[in-house]
Length: 244
Image (cartoon, rainbow, N blue to C red; front, side, top):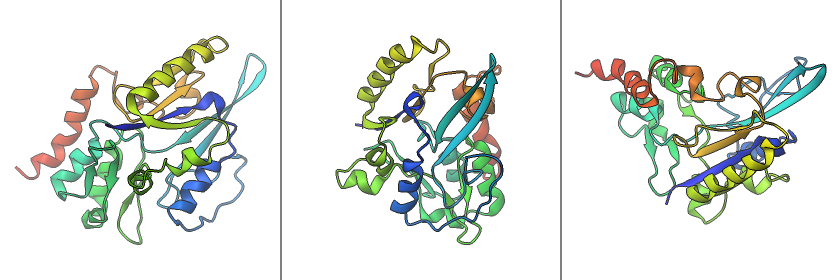
């Protein structure tokens, strides 16, 4: 039975516990950063940060509003990254049918830099990052090793506020819908993001664009005259044509 993460951003305090725990569990090295006038640090996802709590500040009706978004791979039901990668290196990207996790294997190092860039551009959520040292593509693996050991993902284990939730997909969808009822009482623009297509389901309490450009798949073209299925099919065409 596929698993899912439910991320309730209305409960997020931007403690960044999930971000740090992810980095520690995967034994990722430190990233040199500097103060850029934002609490968000580092400035973007990178080969050594699979998860990043994004900060966005807006003045709305004379009041300053802060929006926090723990960004990571969405583990799509139909992952476009896998469609593209399969055209170049079979097995570079796999989908674990037991959990629904989309995994980048060490075979991604066989992909050329421009092929990796094509895979990143195919992602509706702008997630994969290439490690120029190893040549591998990197992203969240939904803590597949912890799941196989009967444990929850480390970000869920660490979260102190109930923002991060994990379980059977149907249970997480039901939890998201229940949370939406609660949040909409105070935030009528609240919505659940792309729940039918992904296994990391977000609830946002305001318009998605206030959080980050790639919160929804719409930012990459879905909903702009094409369906998601058509969009994903079109993404795979250029690479597959190269191989006949």
